[in-house]
Image (cartoon, rainbow, N blue to C red):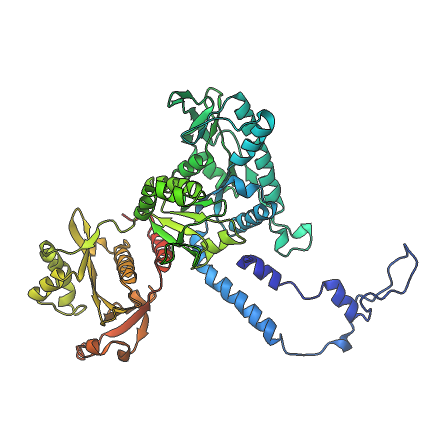
Length: 545
């Protein structure tokens, strides 16, 4: 599927070339010639148009209008994501399998160039594991020794790594220098080139040493990522390219796993995202019969705890699929980066335009793994009653909330209808969530209150997102909220005003006609939608305590 940007560029191309239209307007038919001799000059043409041949007509056909409308819709839908990701740092890692596929590789480079043009600050890493294996196999009839997944790097292995890293860098630089030409530009003068910088001072290395009694030689680990130096180049509008080679202060060269460098660089740069482009595999939901072949439905999002649970099933997944090893290895590096402060990590298969679709569409194209932003949210307990009363009472007094007798509040807490966001185990925000019908497809959000001291710090957004996830997991499709004063807060978060008739009959029967609160409804679809909204409000409140 071509990217939205490519589709837009292509749609803006005229159906005929300029020269073809000019020939037609000037009375020269396509293919016609007045001189038959080889090497003769071109026929004389009049550059001015024949004004008599111009008329006024409808702008475009219905077909062309529909196609244009579709592209305009896609561009408008992507605009919030463009704003969200502009000026943010992202670390993108490509698996070595991708490098072998020329068309796929160039497509990813085009997508990376598009990200750069859209204002994303990129750090790129390319694994050369397969290429090094091939070179070693050709030179010494074996791929060397590995210990716990680490290549034992002797002089021959280090030389192969150095050669392949140089070749990979050359390919990336060449691909990005011509990137986006395939997106609709007709000649080199319209090409969008990208400046790429690499160097020996971005990542320093140290030796891994002896592992299980085996000296790993020049195999290294990332010692330090110089985030300040990398940031200076990113701020200058350059893409930074890192490799598997890292150097020590005393001049030694080490072979370091590019996945490790990516996972270290992302938190050091305060990157908004760490992205791994896989070898072509993804997590998918199993069908009810235990197979994934029937549906092959992509797992669109995982919480950090979910990813940890998958890693606990590593051995089981290894047995079910040989491709699981790489995917789980990348998941492990995602978890490591998230634990160091990165908010979101992505696993993306190298399909056409997948990188752009993952970042600039609601449905995405890969698996998003996100850090737990709901820390402190839990079900309320009877011991929280005093705190709930202190939160709710001021808003009951000014008429924002309907007064709740203490016994009724205690009853709702015991039934599990109330949730709190606690700090040092003291509730600083609360909300209720109740089912509205027997089928459980409609629910009501109520009594959403944040303590005065903690307002404008995204606490209400966090609580709302958490309860939306609870509702989605319970099968709720429509979430209602009734309000007399905070209507715009709900509208800004995707709720639409709804008529009284949209409420179930049982809820309409107890509607307060004296207060006449306005009714709002939000359609709940999937966790991925909540992930997208989380990205917006966490970016908006970045740095808030």
